[in-house]
Image (cartoon, rainbow, N blue to C red; front, top):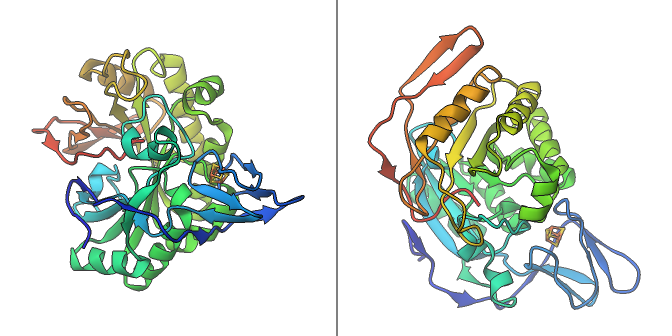
Amino acid sequence: MLAAENSLCDFRPITAPKEAWLYEKTIGDGVVCYLCAHRCFIPSGRIGICKVRENRAGTLYTLVYDHVISLNIDPIEKKPLFHFLPGTPSYSIATVGCNFHCRFCQNWEISQFARERQGVILGESSSPASIARLALQSRCHTIAYTYTEPTIFFELAYATAEQATRAGLKNIFVTNGYMTPEALRMIQPYLHAANIDLKGFDDKRYRRVCGAKLQPVLDSIRLMKELGIWLEVTTLVIPGHNDSDEELRQMALFLKDVGPEIPWHLSAFFPAYQMLEAEPTDRKTLLRDRQSCRASLRLLRKSSGHRPRRHILLPLRQDVDTADGLLCGIQLARPRALSFLSDRH
Ligand code: SF4
């Protein structure tokens, strides 16, 4: 039985890698993985940028299939999703690994596990059927693939989502949005909602700080909307990095263009991983940012917190009609510490 509620699973070394999906063989024993927008060329004996997909003599393997590193039962609002099955618990899982290496990652201990430990990968064996069954037994309405990037454990997420859908559960990705259109279209029949991180609107900063490009994230936001997957967007507001009025305005205008009804969450940053020098986001900054964006969007929510590595939601109590449309009013309630792990990564 996996450890539940706010804890990491017992560790067990991986023993049986599974052949990966979404790759093609190229010259020699090389392969190209097209699971995410990095589209890594991986020579034989090497691993991809995410550190969890390995080419062994021309066959690409996922090193994290059915090896879950973290499992929690969270309120769905923690993802955050405020307009999809509100008030329900969500069975939340992750493996190690990520295709980004954000300097400010709030869950770097597991997302960067293989990178920081010279390729070591750990987790507890857990089949898609058992994950779906435990989610049902826990009276969860959804399974969330979260904490690290679900794209890099795509085979596990897909197989679990398929079984969960048959059992009447819904599936949620909390994602950096860097999957390819091929991957997104493949899982779409079983993916009911997502929260995508939009980490800013500056491609150079995306490359420098996260090791990725901005455009594929914007493309995923548009495609998810087109595919009819319920979508909410989150921006981790980092003072002095992505919180200028101009950058917030650009993000707001982009989201308005995709769909002004998309809820946008502004989330508070705490110094973490390789960005310990930055200041945590204070409440005043989030309130100022909300004012900067309110003319552009219909739904805007603010998350904040007061302790490192805790994501504390300030629940909204009312929606307010304005000349610009529906803006979610904010009243601060007593903060609830929801989980050790953040859904932002
Ligand atoms: S999932 Fe992305 S980062 Fe990992 S090997 Fe495939 S293309 Fe590279």
